[in-house]
Image 1: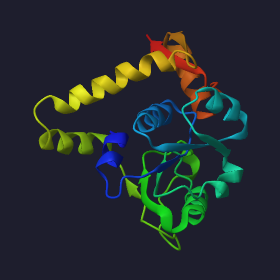
Image 2: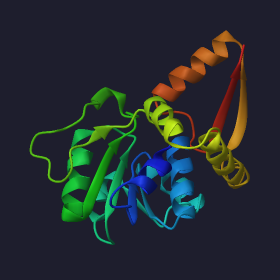
Image 3: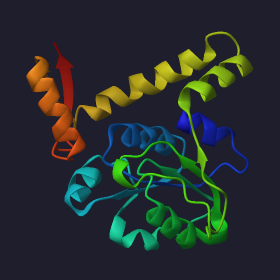
Length: 198
């Protein structure tokens, strides 16, 4: 849906700067965008740089501390999964006039999450809520077309993801509770995909 939105945008971005680049949704978005010829720049923590590079889905990988180097390369979109105001400002300033879109997808940094608006150069960040977008987009396309497009993207992504995500089964209430706490505390390795069942 993120990719679909950006491919319909005016202008269509040539570069996508993606925060929380190690998150699974960010990786899937990078895959879809890269397949359509958009240069992808991943922003991540220092501990996840090697993992993000190993996905081969980002043309460039920067740490949050070096996010000020993400500018240049054509019309850009900021796809923000982190929700950290200081980072948003850094990206907006680095991209300058080339920043055409700023989407807030989520807030992986849940302790510091809010949309900055004051003293922010470029477009105002807007919350991208997938269910609303999908419902509206489905009405614009022939019946079943959105599902067809989404299905094709998923089928293309699954084989790629197997090379860098290892499924890990979590069973039982206590194990699921601990997995949740580990996730909140950022103690789940980026290369693990947790499959939880009671």
